[in-house]
Image 1 (cartoon, rainbow, N blue to C red):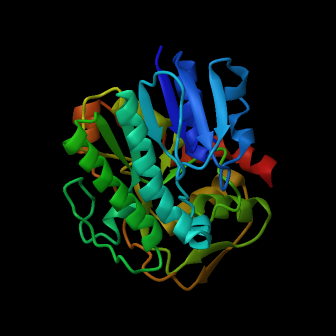
Image 2 (image 1 turned 90 degrees about the horizontal axis):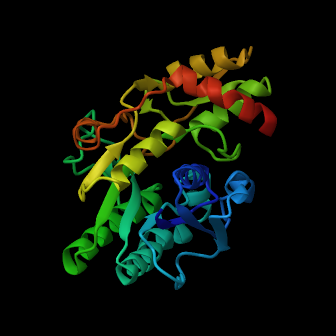
Length: 310
């Protein structure tokens, strides 16, 4: 059994990571300031006497009594709705929050895992994106608070690895979806699900030919755990290489929900990436991981949750 701290524990992805670690017999200390996280996401975790939750902002000094074997820094305002509303807080979580959690890992001699993002690649000129691609990012653009928070976070992780010989992991996460996503999340799958289940037209921005690659949450958690248990200290893409246009996604959502909704097209937001697809060769070879859940199957697994939320 290991003792593990998970920041962003009440979030969509963080709560599933807590559940998996508890299932594997670890003691889990969850931390969340509940800006975007929801305590009900941890209903299953609270059944375990090996789980505790602390309401705390990771940009402030962090004190944890006793030993820690790992620190998983998942705290982030990943939703476009939230990082546009809280740009400074988003930057502080990536900078100060990463600094504070790295300092804690150094103090405890713990393994450190940082969840970065495919957004470090910006609007890529290379498709699919390998970890070696340095990206096409505007540091002063409308999305820069999120993109740059993660790019800076990666640089901090590298600094602690090189200066303090800290045992680190960096996961570049691609679009993840599933139950526990907020309906007001602002990402495309919750938007489409909410619209389809309430009989409203699905809103597609631009011509809908831009692409994304969607990874079901259980596959993502498998990938993160595999990375944590590996000895890979360089960034690794974790995502599903099944690239779909937004138009294709809309059609699958309509089919799995049985909705009669139509599709409405609106102007594309500025600097919205045209393509997004992970090259997961490294994850396959170094971690023995690749996603197992198809887009249709993942959406079918998610419908009941979104119906209840609506």
